[in-house]
Amino acid sequence: MVVAPFDHHAPNFPDPLLALMWKTVSEDCNLACEYWYYSASRGQSRARHNRIDPALLEKTIREYMTQTAGSATFLWQGGEPLLAGLDFFEQAVALQAHYAPANTIISSALQTNGTLLNADWARFFRRYRFLIGISLDGPRETHDRYRVTTTGRGSFDLIMRKLQHLHGRFLCDAFDVWYNDGMPEMSVGLFDSLVSACAGRPSSTCTHSSACSKTLVLEQNGDVYPCDFYLDAPWKLGNIGSNTLRQILSRPRYGRFLVLVFVQPETVIAWQRKRFRDHWTRMGRAGKPGRPLISEEIRELIRKVSRANPLWGTPRIVGELGKLGIKVAKSTVDKYRVRSGKTPSPTWKAFLKNHVNDLVSIDFFIVPTIRFKLLFVLVVLAHSRRKILHFNVTENPMAQWTSQQIVEAFPWDCAPKYLLRDRDAIYDRAFQNRVHAMGIKQVLSAPRSPWQNPFVERLIGTLRRDCLDHVIVQNERHLRRIVARYLDYYADWRTHLSLSMDAPNPRTVHPPEQGRVVQFPELADCITTMNGWPRNRIQGRSVTGRATSYREGRGPAP
Image (tube, rainbow, N blue to C red; front, side, top):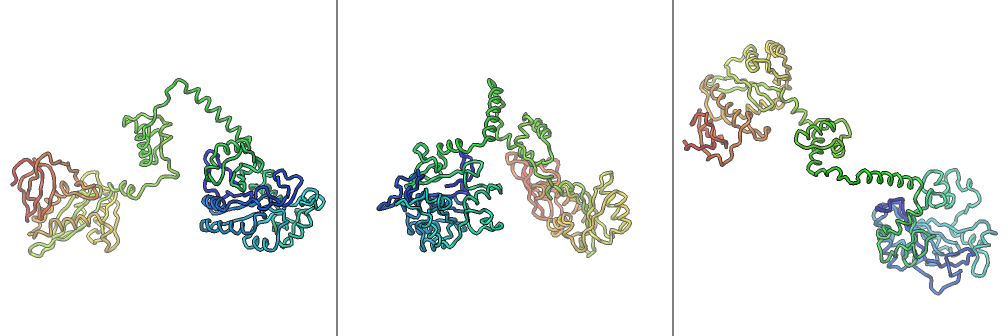
């Protein structure tokens, strides 16, 4: 099992570079090689060869497929893996297909001495696209000296005949022929490893890598070892039948092996630097209590302040917290503050709120009288808290009269920066010159687009629904009195959703314990409020209609 580099203290799962290698029949082999240290069979035939238990095979493949991350690689070695039989490998590929997640790429490779190849094996390898490696020790003289059959004869000619079933050419004497102008036609392990190393990519062999590849070797009975050269009992990591793959990779013994084998010089140097830092850190803290812990509440407050004010630096946040009675070090704020990755931009809500104090809207609306005359009402509305700055009523509106109303709305040096209005002809050149002289910039809505001046339009609609739709206006003076009293109520008592349910003039909250609710006649429909007793207000004041308001008080209900 080949594992990509990872911190042995915290294994990484799943891993697309994780591969599974089986010693398929353990040490069993049909050759009697002179140098084969691993096998005790020395090529002797057995009545029954070692094979992986079917239940163990299924368990291992099932667990491995959960760690593959889209790519699964199976490597089959021995001994001679073909001794397991074709039926064994057919079962293995069926289990791979059964447990593989969707869209998983399955790769298989097998290393054989080639003496057992036949047409059935060739068809199987071709169908499942196996990568086949043939073990040859070089030319005939060298190969036949070491790789011999049980009768002592060389196996080179036998292997060459068997290779005809694979329909391929084996190039072992010339790298340039194998390379084929960058388009190799087959895989030669030594050449593959050399090319990978020259290209700066991980090599499949230890000899061409800066460190040994991390390989778990699985015996036929499920025993697991960290390397093919560490098959001793002290290095046994467990058994795949009784342990999970994650448990085996997390064993402290495997961690010690990785430290023993895979540590690079720069890693040792980094360890020494860390030991040096830790040593002087302990020396500096000896006998001292250290800095007190920062509570989670203060940490969250630092994050909240920095998120709400992305332009503030650390000293500014330290100063603001100091004014709240919270003393923290600059390094503490540096540690917990939230930093913006780019120049912060205000939200549209914040952008409009920053400019709302400079916006004023004006508009006319018409009210008919009992004698069918039309009276014109001009209102001037400040956007900031929906305050009515000025209103007036006239029967004959003219540009001079309208411009005079603007002067009366802003008698001192308190003119706004922007004035929103429509394109009515009443705002002629005389009006525009007067507004320009006051330093006010006019913003005109599009023709027949009242929705572009929504605040004043909403005020007019509210005034009609709450008041004017319930009265019959007699004359100009009567209308002025009605509108004045309604606007008095509007400014002091009417709540607005945009003002967090407050009135334009901030309104005091009177809880129930201050007194009972008392009813007062007010305006021209049922307008209900829940407020404290207004001592300076005339009781029982009534305009036209049957308006009523309710307030808390201590006096008797009228």
